[in-house]
Amino acid sequence: MQPGSYLWYNLASGEVEPVCYVGGVMRRFFSKAGAGKKKGRVKVTLSIGPVPGTEGGEPKVIITALNEGEKPVILTGPGIRLPKKRHIILPLPVGRVRFPCELQPGEDCCVWIDLKALVQQMYSRGMTDSCDIVGFYSSGFALSATSYDSDPLRFNAGEWLGPRA
Image 1 (cartoon, rainbow, N blue to C red):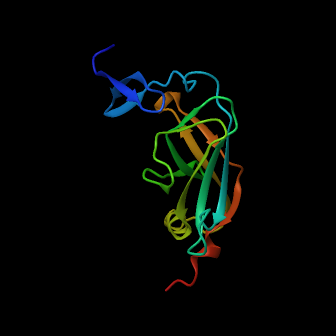
Image 2 (tube, rainbow, N blue to C red):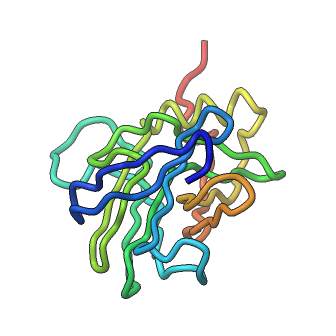
């Protein structure tokens, strides 16, 4: 092991794995998760509606990931891509999962953001016309990061603004 490295006990597998701190961020090396190998098969969907398993309430923008591959995949965080190479990263997303998250084959996870919050973010960036937005999940850190993207969703922030004072 190198200086700055520690050991991490993985409760799921019962194994001890090496960990190192890089730039103040903990980085775990997942040998079983296929780190450093070809991109996994994760299907990402972006939708608008109520949170699955709930009734009514304010509409949400929901980003869902499903591991369609045969190996576990580590997701490090979700976000939404906007036009002109802009994006919204959800550092502390609301959902049924904590990041980083290991998705086993066949497992899924979802996070959401209030529709009003997304509209306000887009409006503050001057985006009130119809445009395509894409939900994504990142896997990995920095230069080794992989992105799993949803199909584009046509979205018009202006329709959701409501009456402005």
